[in-house]
Image 1 (cartoon, rainbow, N blue to C red):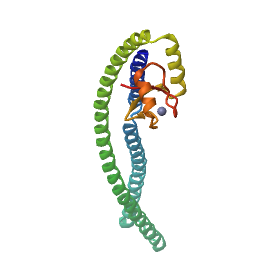
Image 2 (spheres, rainbow, N blue to C red):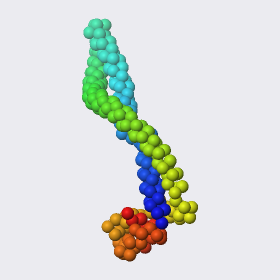
Image 3 (cartoon, rainbow, N blue to C red):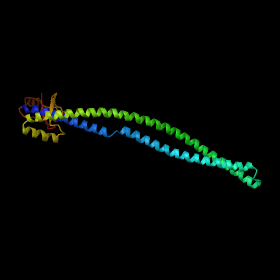
Image 4 (tube, helix red, strand yellow):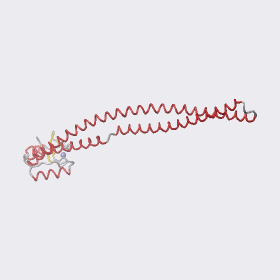
Length: 233
Ligand SMILES: [Zn+2]
């Protein structure tokens, strides 16, 4: 039954079609899902947000400092103007000046601390932006390669389909139906080649008689373990 030869050719074509389809699906996934770029972009966005919160805080401290320094200037000029003679009033004014000065010192400490944080965040953000740019470029190159591979795979796919039609026309209907039914039950592989007296799909050892029968191609010989049609060169 030389149809078994054609059946084996059909199996090879179908296996190539399956592998092609799997690769095409994985290319589609990669093209629509650039996780590296997305995760760096998320990190960059997070750093930018943190930085803008700190900058708002910095503006608040600077406004406060300006306000406190103006107040200090006013109070000091009142103190040294000589217009206030009352010792109690003078004492109160001195207390107020000391209070404002300590206020200013606290604010300056906060400002310095914040400045250090902002500088380190700015550095982290610059690094992250660099990494993002590199990742985006790499992604562009990878995508270009993937698009090219996809185009080649589609061409191969079309050739395989044509070849398949030709081979199917050489296999009898009954045998084709058997093949089709087996394929749907056996994860897409209905025909197994004998290699080193073993079924190459499930790996079970075959008897010399089974190998001989498969080789003669007179009858359909199935693997006693996995049930696939055996093909021998
Ligand atoms: Zn088997």
